[in-house]
Image (cartoon, rainbow, N blue to C red; front, top):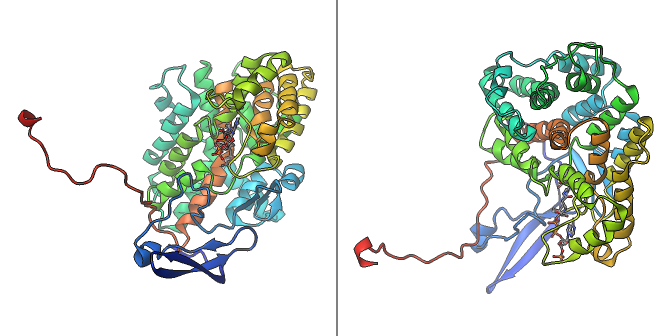
Length: 437
Ligand code: SDX
């Protein structure tokens, strides 16, 4: 099962002086980015743990999928800059790149397109699962439940030790996520589900499943479809972010891929992570007009106020998120196509960005707009309700989660994830019978 070669190079050693001992640990280098000190023997040698809540300085794995240079604002998918992929590629081609490591030849692309297209339908019984939810359930609650339930339908692709089953499960997840997301949307607005149409491309198919109704023709607007396809490319993968780490940790126990992706969806929902696009739009709505922007920038800087500027800041990017630049371009393209360039939310967002980027609180903390800052305005203009924004993020991130999960399963270095802790609770004490307390 484990067959991923290691591309790590020895680049030296690190010495730890602790107590009256000196401990040496190997330092490894990858192709680009920081070197790592291998502390796997630390506890065995020195009887101590490292302490890194939030994993700000911890590499959890070796990966050749995605690379971020947070200081330079660089994002590479298998070495290709996100700006070039957004400009020249399409989401399904990026799916092939992330899954298989290379841009496909025309023949490979046609084969991959056919494979994914013919997995877009879901088992008919899955539709009945939706009926157990209230119509006003948050689409992410529905997605977590329905994607987890895929394990109950596709038993023939849950044996993770079988390379063919891993590949089929990967294709099924990439292909069915748009269908499931569209079903969650239709269910929430009381409209009938729309089946996928094989003659349409991946993103066009998704838009038709969301916006077509049985009583009328639906024609996909190619400008809007291209914008949404580009937005999916921007969201496809992003190193070991919280939801990807969740997928990897779940997968490290041998859990089936559908259960692992459901865990990733649950984590992505959080407003500090994928839920930020929904939260950012709600924030812009709450601010309302540009004259109220200074009041909210003040709130964001106030340590006694839990309010943060949603769509701002990032654990890794200490420069402008390169995806946010492309997202802003897509935002302009969509609003232009729809004759909405005077959208008051866009005006508020641009003023908020202008003020924040010149304020020393944000400058000294290197807080810049991230991908979620402009996505909400764009997705709202495309016709999606706010509570669908994170479901769209999950749809696009599925290929990243699947590719990272597959890499983890095939990595000979990987074992079940099981962090330790620093214990600060009570020392050992004896039980006191109730009558003596
Ligand atoms: C995504 O990891 C990924 O790659 C995620 C993602 C992906 O593609 O998977 O890129 C997608 O999740 C993007 C991030 C979306 N989240 C938001 O927009 C929510 C708002 N942002 C913050 O919650 C925050 O910036 C985080 C969670 C994104 C990052 O938090 P960190 O790295 O843990 O930084 P921190 O909380 O330690 O903040 C450092 C300082 C603090 O001030 P001080 O204690 O130093 O005085 O910056 C401040 C924070 O208070 N700060 C903010 C802020 N973000 C950080 N202050 C106001 N507004 C903000 N948005």
